[in-house]
Amino acid sequence: MKQKYLILNNDDQKELIIREFTELDDKGVLLLLAEEKYDVKAIKSAIKKGKKALISVLRTKKLYPPSLYADKIVESVILMFREKKQSIELLFGDIDLLTKKKKESETFKDVEKEVNEIDELLGDDFKEKFDDDNLIKKDSLIIEDDKSFDIDG
Image 1 (cartoon, helix red, strand yellow):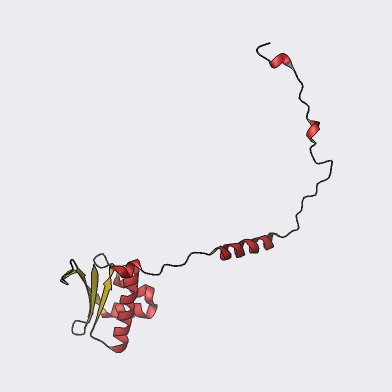
Image 2 (tube, helix red, strand yellow):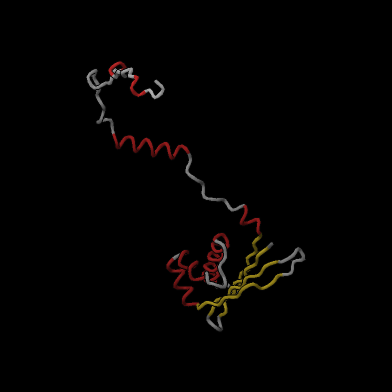
């Protein structure tokens, strides 16, 4: 399934319009899923605050693209205002979401490094000292062979 986002800068109305389309079958026919209109002043203000702020402004109940798509949309909106473009079209396929490089998890070396750092913090100041008096001897425990606990006899 393919997704298409059409970003329009409507100078007359001083608004930004984002339309989301989807392809339902392999025939290439696109269906409008959502259309959202934004005040240009709010968009420009969010651009000044950064990408995260712009994503939070662009995501609404009607239009909530996945993070991979949202990142590309934000980059396109910023480019649109910087270069004074009137429209930008973005095309995505489901394969884009499936092949998105996931954040790499901690490697064993990273975890081992942290363990070594913790060990260094603990230090070797505390060492138990054992002498013969503190050790329990195997033969010090004597069990009496008492038949009083024997039920049968």
